[in-house]
Length: 210
Length: 287
Image (cartoon, rainbow over all chains, first blue to last red; front, top):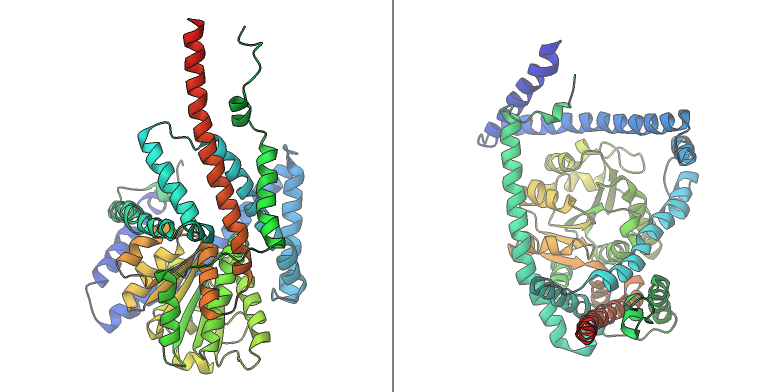
């Protein structure tokens, strides 16, 4: 049992990781078949993971209802909405102009869009209160932010065509350089994590505790 | 002594009730919608590049679109998706549509329905295939490098994809002449890393304004052929296609809100400096 829980997953990760790594350097038909075979497996496994995620969500909310935890009413709504959506989807499909499609279009879409739209109000208020040039670095950020904000909408072009040009320059140069650094850093970290998982150094993916 | 002092105008301004700001934002959105100003929309090279590529491809070219957003980003990405899709249909290209975000499926379906009203001759399984959603994210991208019909055995409408006329000519990512992905998150990175770079397919990104900055390194490295950024990008595309719609009508509102926030931040900083000077002066007077 200990072997299945501890050693076997590490062995499996090592064999699969090395196989996929070596495969990259083998330009043969069987190598391609292996790659696409594994990606098909991965899709099936991810499908199962999605089912587990759904069960976990239901389990969490059912527990809340059972314990009458604070705000359990929201959990009741979540469970009911979940069940009715599944039933409607299975019975009538989820295409537009079906009950599930209507719920999506006339309830889910407006609600989610509203949630996001309210951010504009909070951002305006927060920017007014918090966006202060307290240091030289903050001042540089503030000036760049203001130029991009006004230069990339039509009113900026209306005030001066230079505003738009300068905003584009900020996006294409300092912004691009900064993000390139972030992207390279993330990519290197991903390689490091992959190597650690393949060689069994990183084991947090197996979950903690006994 | 200091507690009895009435707050100065500067102090009162900096402690402005947030409801006043909310009201100003609401007015800045609503008034230009009711009374459009028709501010000029300048087309940026990033957007023109996408338009020119679709425009210059020979009719019947294979185009792949990935709808990777949900209703939270609908106001920005839906108008650009519709505008680009309309352009593709108008040019007579073949179109395959995939979805990596489960909540984006119906948005794509709705867009197709609306375009079918404009172009009744646009035929499912012949001119386009809506492959729908498949779970897996990056793995789906790897898998479509092999075959659409194996990755998506059935399309969104439940029909088998294997025998479709369009799939006979356009069954994998490598057979696409161009790709446009609509992104509200990181799935665009996956498309570039695991898909378009591997199979040498030119790709453009239609992205929200928030994530647009992170796609600029790809543009400069020519791993992206164009970027349609936010609602402004959508309005630019509508201008190029000469079909002004949702994005164009929203441009004045967006301009006004940006101008309002610009003025608010500038005034807040000026007043904050004045407050510091005022406090120093008071401290000197009290000494």
